[in-house]
Image 1 (cartoon, rainbow, N blue to C red):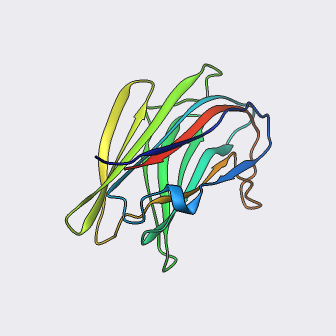
Image 2: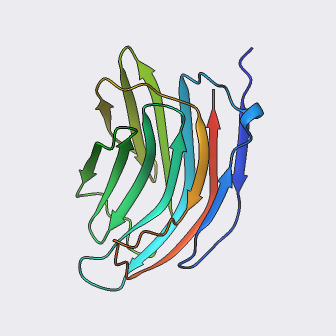
Image 3: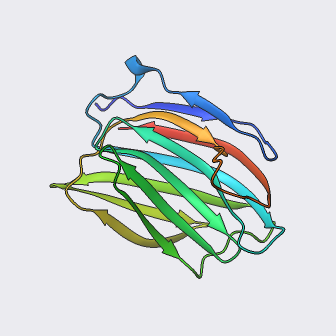
Length: 166
């Protein structure tokens, strides 16, 4: 039987950041899959604005993952432990309409690659492949992370941030 630990942050914040460290003993050290799920409502209040409703870290070779939104797109981005970065952006899946949207990310190891799928409001967006990288268990969830380089003019609400390994 596969043991699974579900950790939740159930809060609603406006333009603030909250983090949760996942307990080391409660996560699978060699997780082959992980999942992150949250509810987000955004409204853009300016041109060129972007925001990250959720960010998470893992013990794998891709250290940080993030969902980014702007007025007309949603993106899944990542930073590898060697500093290389990547992102896939879907321009037709805007979530900055002020309505609540359920966002779910699944990732799994597939041979030498990580395959991740982003689902927004029940619509599965094309899975992505991060070549030559190793998945690791979730170590930290961050709601609305602050980034001094991002000039956000979004009004944000994020709720029910959940992550689990298996």
